[in-house]
Image 1 (spheres, each protein chain N blue to C red):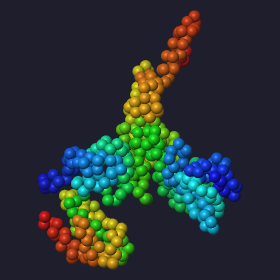
Image 2: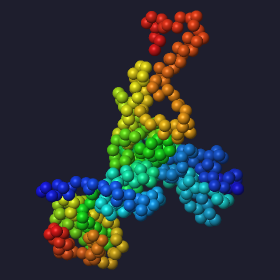
Image 3: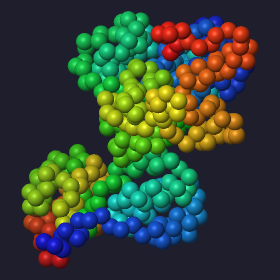
Image 4: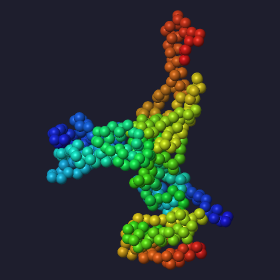
Length: 267
Length: 165
C-alpha cells in the first residue's frame, strides 16, 4: 500500500497508524502522550495531522489513526503549526516549568506568556494511568470529566496497594511525578499530592530498607516468570553483591588475605 | 435529633442484594458494569464504596476503573443523596425564564448552598444543563416527575409536602 506523506510516496502496511508510518520514514510528528508499548489514547492532540480526501482535508490524530487506504497525509502545514502552537501555549499553563514544553514552544514559536499560568503539575496525558494499569497495580485513575478530569487514586485516598515500580514517574512527559523513599516507606507524589505510600523491606543483612514490600508473585506472573525468583528477596543488592564477591574470593583466591585491611573502606 | 443521626449514617451494604444484581440480573458479566452500578445507585441512591469494591472483586475490574466511570457520569454519586431529589434546569431557555431564581429560592429555603443534600438526607437539590423541554421552561423535576413552567409558589407547595413527611 502506498501513501503520500508530506508530498513523498512511501510504502505503508495497512493497519499501521499514521504515526508509525511517519516515524518509519523519518518524519517527526510531535507527541506527549505516546509510548509505542502502550495503546494510543490521543490525549495530548499534538500529533494531529491533515488527512487529504479529495479537495478537502480533515484533522486526525496520527497516533491512533490506522491507515486503511491510499491517502495523502500532511504533517506540517501552516494550519497544523498554528494549532500545535496554541496547544503548547495551553499545555504550558498547566506545567509552566516543563522542559519538554519549552522545547516544543521554541520549535513552534509559541508565546508562553499568552495565557496566565494555572500550575497543576500535570498535562493530563494519561500515560501514568495507562502504564499503571499495564505494569503497576492499577493505583492511578483519571477521575472526573472535561475541565475536572485529573489523575487521581480511588476515592482520592493514598493508595496502599501500589507496588512502587516507578513506571509512572519514568513515563511522565513533563517529569512531575516524584518517588521518594522516606525512612521505611516509599512515597509516590502525583500532581503535588501523595498518591501512594508503601512500606519498604529491610535488608536482612545490613538492616537498611531497600525495596517495597509487595506481593511479588503477581509481578513475576506478569513478567512471565511465575516460578523464578528474580532476586533474593531478603538481602539488598549491595549486600548480595558483597556476599557473592566474598564467596567468589573464598573459592578461587583462598591463598590471598580476603579480610579487609584495618580501617579500609570495604563498604 | 437522634433520628436524624441514625439516618445520616451510611446504609449497611447488603451483599446478598449485590449478589442478586451482579450475578442473577447481569450474570456476572463485566460488560454490564454500568448497569450494575445503576442498579446499586437505585438501591442506595448513591454508590457506597464497599459495594464498588465488591463489584470490582466479583467481575474482576480494578476499583480504579470503576471509580473512573463513577466520577465520569453525573448520574452517579459517591455521596449519599436525599430521599427526594429535585433537578432544576439551568439550560439557556430555563435560565432566561428565571431558573436561577428558583435554584436560589429552594436552596435558601432548604438551607443549602446553591445545591446539595440536606443533613437529614431528606432532600437533594441539583442543577442540570438541559432537560430537552425548553418550550415549557423553566422546568423542574422532582422525583422523576416533571413540573413545566415552574414557579416559586408551586415549588413552595412541593417542599411543604416533603417537609410534612
